[in-house]
Image (cartoon, rainbow, N blue to C red; front, top):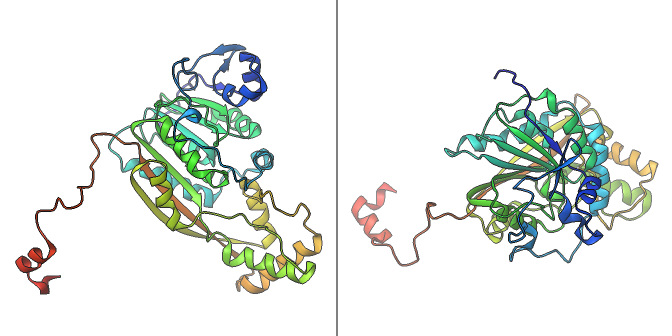
Length: 371
């Protein structure tokens, strides 16, 4: 791929969105994404700036805000800000997940001219895209202002043929995207931090055009369960006489298909990979989690981690799970989800009772021994 002049790119921040529209505080979330700034002047973009008769994804009939707040989204935003500056240039684990997710685009014959990359590992997706999916416009959105700023500042390093890239500060729980305006929504290791995962997926479906594709990779419930959870529990019981939540609850594999169906996607597909990453110590694992923005953001967390508890956790981790080479393993379970927005051209299951042959007839015809 030859290096071509970088196309025009745009960047939006919370302050610029408020200044352009003059909206009240109640309109701030919706104002994000309704105006883009180019050379100090408002720039209208149809995917983000719907006419008065149109609806944003958050206004759809299927969207309901979660009443239960598990994660502290303000804290998660700060953790994402920190991760923007701690982010490694290349992360083998994150790159493997992003590569596996993007490989699914090569299995599709159709192209996706307008795409949204939603939170999580944005940098890896951008770096490993390599023209897959036939994208013409790519919106990169994250709740962290610093993450978007870092991506925009390094944009010139990634020359892409005929791909116009937009950078938006926005929340996955309140998508500032016009309905039926996208061909692809992709999220790599981001959606598992939403308080209302079904609601976020419903909004993603509303943003898609008919026959649009939803691709997501989230951390599964077996992530760090065997190693870090056990080490934290033993260390806290020993040092503090009790335990407090240190690792976030994550979706199980059996839930992923139900989530896709509940969100209204057709042809749902779910598969799972497990990655074992080796670290020099448990403390290096914690630093890696920080650089990914994957540290604890529970509302019911303990705000203080005592030094002796942290050191005891590292010691228990090393003694129970350390290898002969001195390294410690960490297991990450990644759930990949694929779903399509309904379209008449898609294959559909036949209605119950419509079969013209029974299994008994098939067995009689081919013989019982052939099975």
